[in-house]
Length: 231
Length: 378
Image (cartoon, rainbow over all chains, first blue to last red; front, side, top):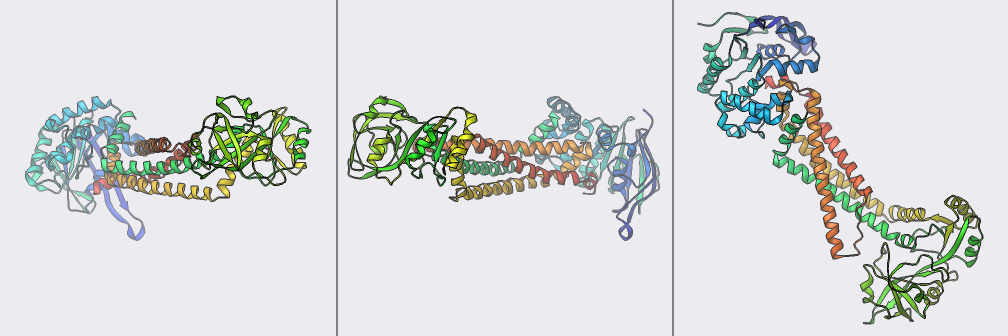
């Protein structure tokens, strides 16, 4: 596996046209390597989420290229891109987006089901990931019976069940209290991050900065201070 | 796809409240559609009961005749003329009229009297008691044992009837394929006796029943009869004319249409709206699925499956409920004129398919329009 997980160059993205045109990304370039946990921080409206979406193959940039593991993802067809996301990228959303009518195990098994794995086999494997996040005993409960922190763990288990090389976390602590957020990121840092995985985290919660390998700051659509691990 | 469909199934049925609301909507709509169309089918079948029971291939009648019970008498020469036409194997007269039977308690019961050709007895019913030859006995009548039989106080062979101030004797009990529409008993006798017992206008032949030499001769017979100033109609054409009369000239068709449209609107609005709410409630999660890597056509497949599953389950429940109530009603009221036909089933299925298609179209549009990026933006 090449060491560079994500390589983006010259990313430009705007929304709207003419007078309503808003520049969200202005010539953004970045590189993230396997084994890194890269934070993208910045104020609201700075373009963090747009950058995350472009990097993960969700939002097409107006200009620039994104290579994930050497593949030009914006050169893929929409079906190829969907397959690529399913195979390579795991998502942890700010609001978890778990299905309340499914059990915790079924929620965690969704990527495996989408990969056309046998239902029971997928549930069985998802339970292994629930075990990793410490929720095996809650496998048969619906997410609504779990606390916010536990639901975020289910979302992490769901993201991990597809064994992605890249984990995208969008404001993972925004819906959690300070301690729980800290605990979740600590868990991810210790148990999820490894030399074969790259984690990109968008956040403006500086209480979790200690887990970052690098912190990139965004402001007004531009990436600044692509520094290393904070002190 | 199997796992994705199971996922769609679980998302649907685990939302018990919405799934139930959708099922109730479709079940109720199907039930109403089925019930109304079944009643109408039953009415149409019973209205054609004499045509079905007599079984003649071709019926000659006055052009003004709309239904078999509203016959217009034809002069005797029509029978002779038809018998001499090319393509006719044989032709016999048929009388159809109404009479009053005096019951033991002094009240009167209306009856339909069918007068069969004296020589051939063409169109005679199947006897379950007695001998057909006894119809020639003095004052002989055959009573049909159908749902109306009891209205004549359950007569038996040898029972006497006072029919239009004439004495009648029951010489046979018969069964027929279909009982009449108007809820009155049916008596069979000979043509000659029928016109003696029942006061008639100048012309007494209600219909001339024709057996053609071959099916290909029917158009030729129809042309010849038309040249005579009358109409020859095949059994199917006569039944269709009867149906057309009830559909277009009695308001029955309009009522049927209104009820069916109302049922459709009720089903569509209740189920469509609930399904749309279901989609809206899960819209962000569908967006999350899209972000994770679900292809658009897989999402469309999930929604189509959910709509189709709900529609077909509701259809089954609606048909079952209708069948059960028709069965129950027929058990209590043997003359209950409702009949579930393949056409009724097809009409209801067609409407359910439209409900499912509209509901899923609206859902698919919303789901396809959601961008995974919106999920990130919150």
